Image (tube, rainbow, N blue to C red; front, side):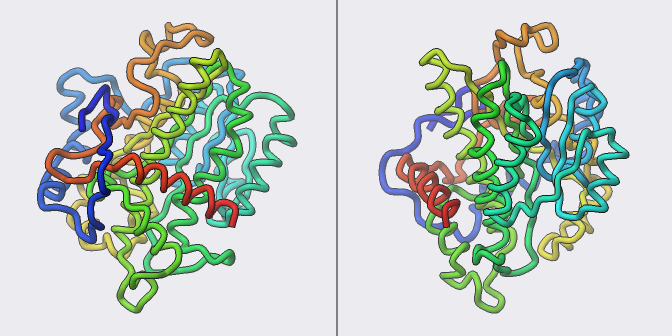
Length: 367
């Protein structure tokens, strides 16, 4: 495999790697011992003159319509607040009506929409209503997919899906694909998928995702649920889908149509309600709590991407003729495109695995 402008290319064509139930030692050392995930990383970036973080984007986004999925708390709330401060018409989603409406008022968002993102049919209905009733034929300029959660045990949704798989992956797939027509009406649409760099610990494993959603291979057995692995597997799939959608949009652009700009962003290790409530992360949280980033610091790269500042020339670039600094579909961390696989981690996906992931998501989205 090679790394080109932050995107892994040259997927292996042979047999997919065997199922990994534990990350390799090489991946663990590189991931866990990297201080750049923490607030210290931001301090070091500032020392070398990197742009200030946790500030509203230095552009005006008036006339831009943005949807932040999962925008009522933590990183999503910080993203929504920064984009609203820049003048965008910001819509946020969440599960709890009272908390969501309060967040919308406090952040200056246009509206809050009550959505359970683990319910596939509800996500689809919301996307359809949002496109027709809220947008009314207008374009959607930016979608920020921030919804994700680490579960504390195997739990099925009312539709029979495993909840982490439904929330982090299937609902994510449904929302994005359902809103693509509205995004494609925009002159410069962006989709920013917030992901955890914990995905670097595992490769794409569609068989494991299927077992997870079905509760097979011990996932639903007492003591058999591996919350960290489930979280990492779904986030690896989010990164792969980002690249897949970007390739589709590149083909549209070559055919002379408007194309949507896809990217995914790692916010770093951030102090969030989700992290505090994750049983599997309790010891790690206690150990690293003093070094974690604030939600505003974690929101910096997603906001930078959502505002279109990855264009060469940043705010000075023409909105109708953007030239981007990295390939469509790139994985970003602290405003820079990064490789999606760690050296010697043995996580590279095959082309067949990518195709099976798309088939899996399409099938489970219809179920």
